[in-house]
Image 1 (cartoon, rainbow over the protein chains, first blue to last red):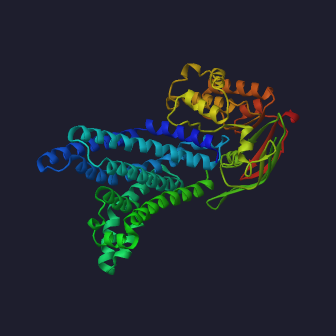
Image 2 (cartoon, rainbow over the protein chains, first blue to last red):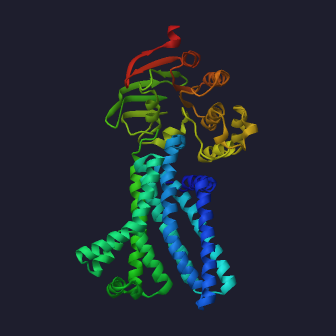
Length: 277
Length: 214
């Protein structure tokens, strides 16, 4: 892959993403919800006396866990399938560019756009809370923003894989929505069901969580905010006991990064052989 | 300049091309003709590496499957359905210019050549079929490639647009470019092609020397 060509494709993708109505609407919603949560956090802090920064960070974690996968999956799913359908991908691939440069370039471009949307939401909330309630644990706040970008990288890679595997905008969008429901809602229910039905121990529950990137992000976010694995219950205690605090964090971060890499490579492999009309 | 050797393509269990072979010499203009579904467009897609095929295809001596970048350096492609995403005409051509390492002044030159200089800052999405076709031709011609692959180039144009396009394409042919054209329009073929290759159900029926015969 040539770096110059990769950057050209990525820059084209950023411009297209920023102009897309779906992206603009989603980014604006994320910004408004982040600001709304921050204001709510501030008003609650006045009553309870809790630090505004920390309450806001906790609220933003839940917002990011819901919103970022939805945005990443849908943007990834619509990207390549949309261009396959309207014919612009054929024109792009008729240029002296390799398929890998096109696929990875488009992925990176979407990731930059998504990271900018996340940074805007987190940044605006951070400024609002810092000016109203004073500083809190800024490092935890930054860790959370970085975690949201990593989750965006994973969900975007999964969305892009669905896009090239299904080849149609409607099917890819449907599959992306299904994947979001599964990762955000059904996976929890499934895990609880398995734990109850099979009487799983904490080792198995920790292993189960590695199959769901949203769950990994949830655990990592909670650790970033509290630095107390025991708050995650027996599984957190087991993780700390087995790997130590730093080891547990490294394991979860590694698993999350592995998700992004595996999904990206799988998508690139499918795209290499894809029929483009 | 263009060589296809036993090209075979099957999609979803259906044979699209079955051992298609032909040669197009430098400066020659050849039309692939045949009914819808005969495989004309698929031949162009194989040459561009847009579909996984069996056999061998090369452009300018470069294998389309093994050295796709080198092969596509020689080619300008005009698709049947031009699409550029949500960009202006200028941005669409500037991207092509950057990929092909050309200065920005080439963009204006091509916009003028196809009569779109006044629409440079308009979104390509808002263009009529004819304007999109002209923008696509500008993108294909930007690097002054020696080979042009044209897929039903006048299919979406009105009569005036067709006449205008044929005049432009005829000039390109006279300039010595190699043209491979997929078409089923008699006027287009007669005006542009030296030779015709007829396809039916993915096979070459018989090559005809149109100019030589007339």
